[in-house]
Image (cartoon, rainbow, N blue to C red; front, side, top):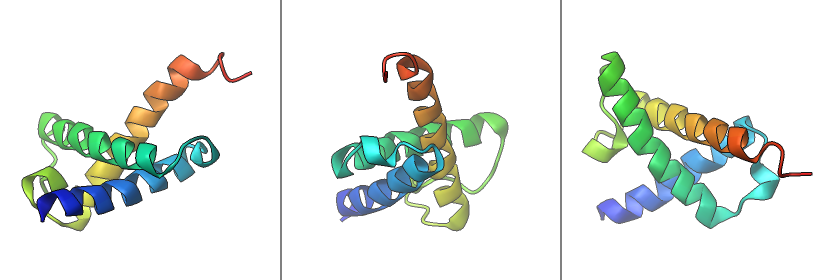
Length: 90
């Protein structure tokens, strides 16, 4: 059951992050799911390093704070990808 939650929440979080970073037309649902899941790990790591409580969705903590940390991690991941692909898009 946990993997299904990861796929669904990862897809939604990745899609929202791609809308925020204006990359929605460049990636499909599979990449949205991957970005969302990796973003959840990055967000959980950032939350633990910065001392922000609330956990993340990887711990089974399905809360608003966990979703926001996952979204933050996904946005950070897409920002890093944008840095490396900025000159190659044209």
